[in-house]
Length: 221
Image (cartoon, rainbow, N blue to C red; front, top):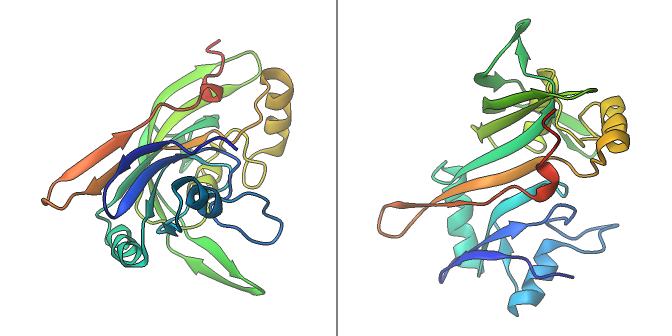
């Protein structure tokens, strides 16, 4: 397995670029997981402090030890860590019957725990950077900021405003995904954790940003 790229390292954390298709944590039916693979890569056990979906690529923080993990879990929960995402979607966001170039999606998501379900408040800010059309599709490139960090939040919220993420077979548009796979060879979820801002020990912040993978580059017309 290829090495996971490291963008930054100090005595507490790594900032890494997780590839799509890699589960963050091992479990039943998971052959390869980031927590195991990256621990092997660096030679000691690393600790997770937040998650990315298996099919989502991009920037993550992982901790070097249990004390650092406790600190960074609290930092992320306190909103001192800012995560920004890029998504390529079918269509354009529609809120209250109108296409919107920017706005806030505030809609509860369902968290399942075994047979139990409960609603959780969720907030996503979005900005439509670009819209373009092909023979069969309308696409939009959307920048997103999380006000909360619920499981599959971005995927659920964008689907709820008629802008499902390309390649999302769980919350998106299955028929459009099938056509896009056939016409454009889209096989991946087009969602990337592209920008990450973290606090530093001197009271300032540091921002990391990556390019989206090549498979995000769809035909313009």
